[in-house]
Image (cartoon, rainbow, N blue to C red):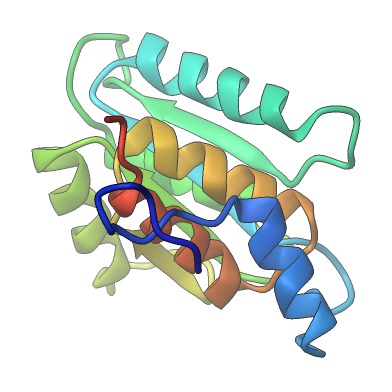
Amino acid sequence: MAADPQGQPAPVAAAEQVEDARAAGAPAGRSGGRVGVVLVSHSRDVAEATAALAKAMVGSGDLAPVRAAGGTDDARIGTSAELIHAAALEADQGQGVAVLCDMGSAVLTVRALLGETDGRSMPSGTRIVDAPFVEGAVGVVVTASAGADLDMVVAAGEDARGYRKV
């Protein structure tokens, strides 16, 4: 990986990560679907706008399933386990679901859903991506849309933590 002028590693674009992995012989994901993505925000508008931005970055390619789960059931600021659960089920194509959360109770709600035993279980392979919301969403959606497996999708999102803006 190249370094920037301050000696920090330069981030690798998500699409480049997928191409590097494919060149190294990594599978592009199991047959039968793609990794799904759920964007969880306290605000419905923020979740939907972030999903729209990330989808736009895919360009004309084949888009992975992306769902926004923002706000409460009655459209207020907050989080809703029901909305998040429904979004994960809709996004699931059997390859896992990468969930990005904006902060606080969004993370706690997803963690609680991952531990549910009351019949409201999340799809198999659902993982929280520890990444900045917008930058991580772009990396995850682009990488999932390129057909990468769940580990690569999560890594692309988490790589966004190192993006330098100066």
